[in-house]
Structures are given as C-alpha cells and as structure tokens.
Amino acid sequence: MAVLSRIRFVEDLFVRMAWLIENVVDAETEFPRASYPKTIIWIVLDGTRTIEVNGNLREVQAGDIVVIPPQTPRIVLASDASASPFHYYTVGCDIKIGSLNFVELYNLPLIARIEDTSAFQELTRLTAKLLEQSLDVIKSLHALDQPQLIISKVNTDETVALLAVNASFNVWVARFFDIMRGYMPDKAQEIDPRISRLCNYMQMNLEKKLALPDLAEYLFISESHLRLLFRKTMGFSPSEYLRQLRLQRAKDLLVNTTYSLSEIAELSGFQTLNHFSRMFRSNESIPATEYRKRYYGITQG
Image 1 (tube, rainbow, N blue to C red):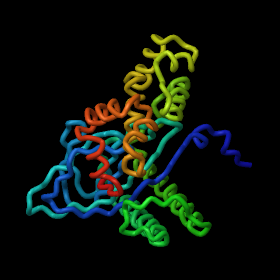
Image 2 (cartoon, rainbow, N blue to C red):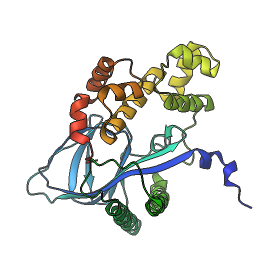
Image 3 (tube, helix red, strand yellow):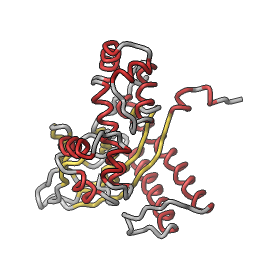
Image 4 (cartoon, rainbow, N blue to C red):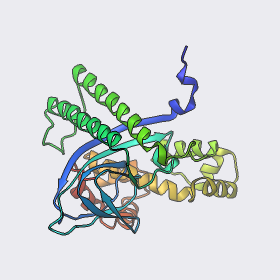
C-alpha cells in the first residue's frame, strides 16, 4: 500500500509549465531588462552570452542550465558580431511548495555547468519532445502563430492532450532536478509553518486590503513578532513580500488577459490605478501599458 497523500511535500507541490520556446538569436541581439512572474529555465545548446542578473554579470555557454527565479530582472547583452548564434530552450514555469518558490527554497544556482554530457543531452531530448508535444496541442487548437489568442474552452480530446503535456512536463521536471541534485542541499530551507501558512493566505487574498495588523491577527501574534519572524524566515518584510506577489499577479494578468489596467489593479490588490501605475513603473522601469505592449502574447525568456 502506498499512501502518498500522507506526505505533505506531495500535497503541497505545484508544477505547471507556462511556455516552452526554442530560441536561436544572433550575437548582436540584446534583450532589454525584463522580469517575469514565472521561474525561467534555460537549456543552453550553443553559443555564449553575457547576462546581467540583479546587477551581476555572468557568462553563459553551451552545456549550461540557467535558472532565473520569478520577479528577477535580467538583461542579455549583445556579443561580438562574429560570434555564433545563441541557441537555447526557454522553459517558463511555476514550481512551488505551497505558495513558496521551489528554486529559492532549494537555493538553486543561477548557472549550473553540467559536466555529465549524456545527462545534459537526455534533458535536451526530453525538452525537444515536450516542445513537439506542446506544439501539436497548440496546432489542434488552431492557436499556432496567434500568440495573443486566449482560449477559454477546450473539448474532451483537447483536455486529454493537455493533461498528457502536463504529465510529460512532470517527467521533465523530475529529470531536471535529478540532474541538478548536486547543486541542491539535502533539505529545503526551513520555513516556519506559520509563515508558510501566512504566505499562502496572502497569495489567495491579494484583492483584499492586507494590512500588517490583519496579517498579525491571522496568525494570532503581535505585529512586532510578525515582522521579526517574517524577516528571519524570508529575509524581507511582509509588506515587501506582499508587494512582490501583487506585481507578479499584475504581470501575469497584463500578458495573459485582456483586462483593463483598472481591473488588473483591483484584482492585484492595489488601492487605486494611480498607486498601481506608480508601483509598476518604479519596479519595472517601464509603464504597465508598455510592459503589456512588449510582452502580451510574446515571451522571450
């Protein structure tokens, strides 16, 4: 008898692929500063590029796996014109334990150089197969080359095909983390269960006004104790975490829905459209309207 439901990790684990793209870009192409509400994983097949992540410059080359956590700004710098094109897969996904990001809990490195070439090639083959399977589903939905099309309904056959893609992605994730195991600690970062519960509560209630007294009352502790406990556990304040959650939801809605900016501000929990616009521009360095124009239906990774 195997009762996996008794294992909290299995119950709390959430895995979902948002996109998968094969990119081949010229050496002179530069990607502007961007941050995504998803975890971004690159499987680098050929070429070298310099990326800037959180102000730090790093070189990426063939055989590398790059893992960029959600909300992490990155810039891909141009290379010398004589350099070979940069060829890589981009996987945009959500991998969480409860409401907490898996790659941050397990302290995955930004760049992992995979010495086991056979393992890297196996992951590459799995990625190519997953891309082919995903494209077949998109073709069946008549959504190929229509990145701005939002599909709200699928029939039974399409549902089964989408479930099969999800199952394949779970296989991909298992192999990915098996390859990355040498870069991971034996255990995830210890998170106080009260903070984990609060993070989940915040994520599920973003549209509400969540002031510090309300959050402290939810955990039946004082505001000062909450501040101390949250910062000790997460490394930043509850208000900063809440701000990041709201911006993450706003970006998701900007690029994946046709909601107006006022509706997005309300659904993300910002007090007013003005407040949302100021916060978004301050965090992303571009207005929300420009972010939508740049990324709606088009994901570069």
